[in-house]
Length: 379
Image 1 (cartoon, rainbow, N blue to C red):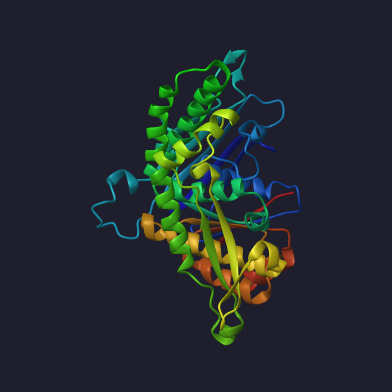
Image 2 (cartoon, rainbow, N blue to C red; image 1 turned 135 degrees about the vertical axis):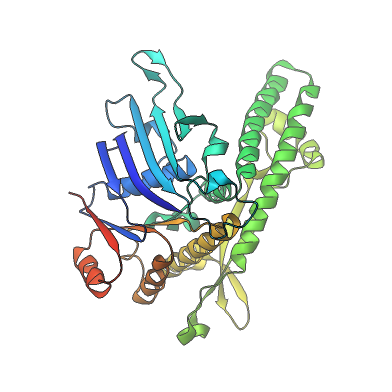
């Protein structure tokens, strides 16, 4: 899978700009605050339909503008074109577009987000996953250290790209929880009939169980992957993800019913899930520690590298397409051996790399002069 062109209109600091990408490696170089990460955000946005730097879409619209557009031309390259599961439209090139508004254009109310594939409006569930991406940035360390909501968002982002049915169930589940909470509030405040819960209970149980199943499948896959270094195998830490699931069922909803009515909130289900990063401190004895509490900053960064390499492999296996790899100034965060590990991978699929280090960039290009690459200079 390759992104050929990117067109930005009123997207953050870019008023009207076009970029072209090499099918192998594209470097985006420039000083801080020159817009390098914004380009990666726009590519990721076409992939997941959500911004990785904000949960509020209007924040991506340029100041004083009412409409923003992100458009990309995508070339699909299935690994196995003889696979009968791969349909014709998954082989043809596509033009993807997302239109953002603040909810009003020239005084007229509008939808805040519209998706188009080859100019045809699509639902988000049919848009997400047309472009596969894996993003690796210094901020990813927050997956280890920050709140469970960030880790749930990460899981949803990966699995929605891998499986459109997951995205549909996630949308259904989130809508069901919102409506169920309104019913709980009506029961609490107005004494409404408890039977109104039955429909929403069944909906979120069905969708929630699908979400749980796919999250568990992905975490099991990641846990089978390990970073290896043949020279220092015994010194390399091992990582695990523990899936702290919130099971949803008729029995659990019944058990929590009074507490849910009192709080007007659904207290069980995938929206309460978490995953915990763990590190094996002593590989011989198999001692396991919470990476957030006991891992060094370097070990936490290595844990994220492990996760991202597994994500790359998972999406390729599930979709039989190589994702576009987006690297946001990560080499300043990794030591030399792990820089080399990442650099050995980027030649396997299209990669877009941002950097502020022109000396490193010029040295890389000199040492790899036979390798086709593209350079976008900002600032």
